[in-house]
Image (cartoon, rainbow, N blue to C red; front, side, top):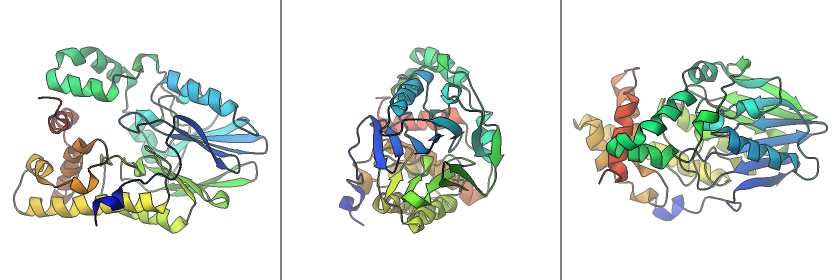
Length: 326
């Protein structure tokens, strides 16, 4: 591998707003794709629409929905369903803004989403100025979003494994590939139009973050996307890509697994390993401090432990690696 293999993975301009992928399928992109700046999707056929994910707060989601209403040539029609690809708030905090009776997720996502708290995020934003380097890092990641204005709305239809929905005459496949990034990650595949929305199974030109694992599930999810042979891959964060972007994420996961395992076997602590792993191959990718979370999750996997590290400690480690505590 060389550094150039992991750069310039976007195949469409990475501009804020709605992007037309053809055949009445659209993605909504939010540069720079870092913490909270997630992507979403719109699938239209006949007199129906389906939305893939909402955004981190209601103002951002309303702005997105307004642009979707103006999508050419059909616009956003009757919304038959909203799909949440996973439980993180930047993909579901805007659910209450969407006028639809059905919100769909995996069962594991619903269970995990019940523990997500916009109120807690709002409280942490207020406390952050008094939290030292951790607070500075927290504001750097999340200070642009309004969590006080979020009315939480959970999915009311769940599944495990795989299921399908129709939007007009289009078949949309929902494929559970978690636990990986989170406990219940779902791919949204439109086979007739060779498009897949991946949620946070893909971060393009940004470091992935392994909250759940096992890493093998995530690698298998990448292989599944590659086997689809689609024209457009819409990641959870970053520019639209193709199989080159999927392979780059897969290679990153294989690399950090191998490097973490070597350091685990040598007796290094997780934070020592995170500081020691050479990430120069991915130097153009954002949020490299996420290696702290990734190594912690991999060490937990190697030990056969289920209990995740306390979230505050993980953010303290990321703050340290980001350099914001200098």
